[in-house]
Image 1 (cartoon, rainbow, N blue to C red):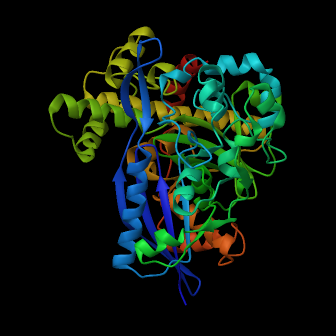
Image 2 (spheres, rainbow, N blue to C red; image 1 turned 60 degrees about the vertical axis):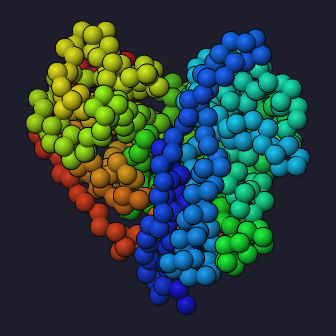
Image 3 (spheres, rainbow, N blue to C red; image 1 turned 90 degrees about the vertical axis):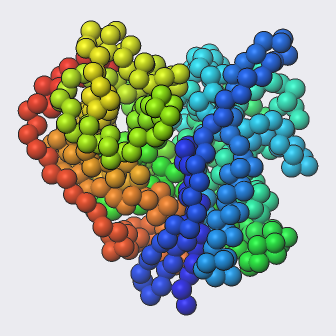
Length: 500
């Protein structure tokens, strides 16, 4: 009898619901609902009367769309599910009191309150010790920064908190009342001990974060409850078991990469962010790894040794600004044609320059970066996008060099998974820049990994390694062969002067 699983895949710019079917050793999946969402800017006076910009998520809108996905399953597929699993972006969370009421709006990780928090965390505990304990690099959005901000700026609010629920945990809580988080998501918080996979008491104490508010950490694949009986009745579904996936979307995406040899495969989870790394057996928390800001994130029986880089965000923000200017959205196919025709290497940027993190206007930010670095400003939209894509490919090469040096391995192939794997031009640029073949797909890599972890948890598949042939049989993988590397070598020499 086929097993039907439900996956909710939530990125920072949209969500999708899928049904996955395992039957007689085969796997198939279908999208049944999708929705767009993003952080909402609000302008609210604080206790002093000063108006501050706050960027927040609409959790009720997201929950409503999860319910709409389940309604679509019941209407179009069946009246019984074997499991539900959720994955999300790897930051942010909600504060609940003992009655389950949310105490404040859920901040978005791009909110500017976090702009200076890295230095404040480092002032509480030696940065080398932080990295030795957690293996996580320093980023403004780390949960460590967010909770320290609460300690320092909203102590009265924190005193009322019964539990902190990270983003995926919040929606599991809405569905079934559970209050746990899986180790893949907890690992990116900069609060989990990379070796014990439990909350680091030393980190919590140093930042004055109450230990009792932190949710239980469970392994990917663990059962985290079942749907509320009342909700199941309202949906006309069974009380579906809830399964902890690798709830950090990057962990799920890496689990879906059809990798034959982890030691020689560079994996890029390509979406709003580009997560560039390798699967390694144990964390590498050496001074050399810390010096280049590498992270050791919890995987599924392994560690993701990676760097979090800017991905599709730059192109998405360019398109958003142009849609405002034009009064309509440009088709991506139209922009792709303009990009392909634009002259190569007209300008280069560091995609991870702080000026691109959350600017008012991305085109203006790119132009200012070019002026600051003595380059001509790209003349048109195609040139702007080509500048972004070429610079991203060169950043992939830069990070690959760092990973190979620290891990002592060499990359022989690049696996790109996620929505960005559909970007054929960027895929080709990546092959050219690194001089390596690129294997692109699955496109919905995060959802695929979500399903595979659920399947392991349910015993449908024995191990995550055993899922690899299932993935390769179910999805077409597109290959891009490298071309002439010489012009990319020349551009790379220029690029390295910009990124240090």
